Length: 77
Length: 347
Image (cartoon, rainbow over all chains, first blue to last red; front, side, top):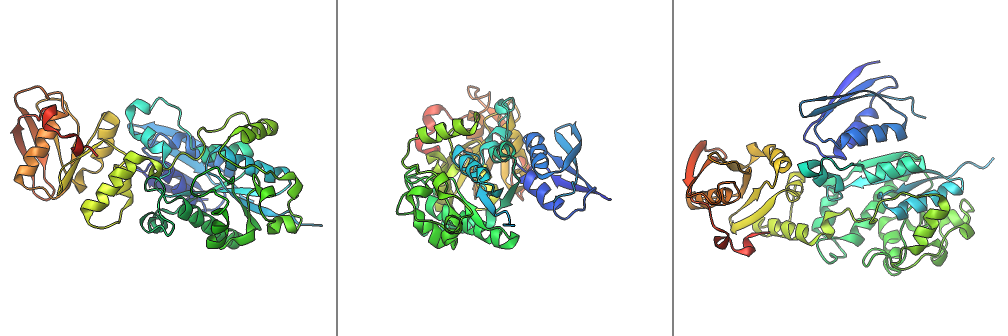
């Protein structure tokens, strides 16, 4: 299991979701992906995308104007 | 045992695609959603940019619909490929720069490619004959089937009963008798079906999230092409058209003026790419200058920046000018008066 990072700053939704989705496709179940965003829309959209696609949000933090969301990749089907 | 058939459904986030998808789920079809991001279907963007909208709840309607239906959603970035649809639409534009028929052909073609790559059986859309003036007419629905290459793998559950049978119906994967015969612009049948299906919450108005159907946005895009001398755009161009006041005081340049804190902050991200300025003697907006500006043009732009600052009634206003590739300097200018700004400068 490995930890990865994704810079989605200055991107407006749905681009942070698309970048997250495309990166998760390259990862293995159990891997974690830390996504840094600036669009507050990501606070809704990345968790929604994770819920419908079987991934888990394990941490959400806000620092200055940045939002950091950590996703654990699910088993898929 | 018969295998469960799989369909991909084009999910816009509106009611029609939601109903069409539910109709397939009700018939035991495995459905996954697909949503194409063109750069123009961006209801969330202006909310994200403008500070005054930040308190409003934001949701991506396509994701929300997928979650309500309990299906997966694949969001596909088609920004680059979509440029040809916008720039060279074979079937022309609608009332503004909306290439609705070419757009639908493109999206169904992409969905057709997707089902071939992923081993799915057919495509579902929420189209209804007569619902839209360009892309959803009795004579244009077959065009979409033909030009997308999907042919009879494209099923429109909401109006299937008034269309020729498709492969999923002929093969018995889907029971045609349980499909619908909706036509026209009215929404009553859809609202009634939503109620019957137990769908109480849905986005209104449906399908209204494309900036290209907006007259003001299209005018700004047409201006960009005219003064650039060619019909092309990058994602940053189409994003900036959504932000701020755009004024073209001279053919060789335009300015983009942030209207509030959120927009100024967004425009700050473009400072390195553009000549820009802001007032230092008074609070005021960030102003980007797009084009080639001579010395007189820069003074004019600075006077406009002053006009949109809190120093608009002052005798003079100091403006800090950051000229792309040419350093920083300060100008002292008289703000333009309202009468000195012809209405046709506003895009």
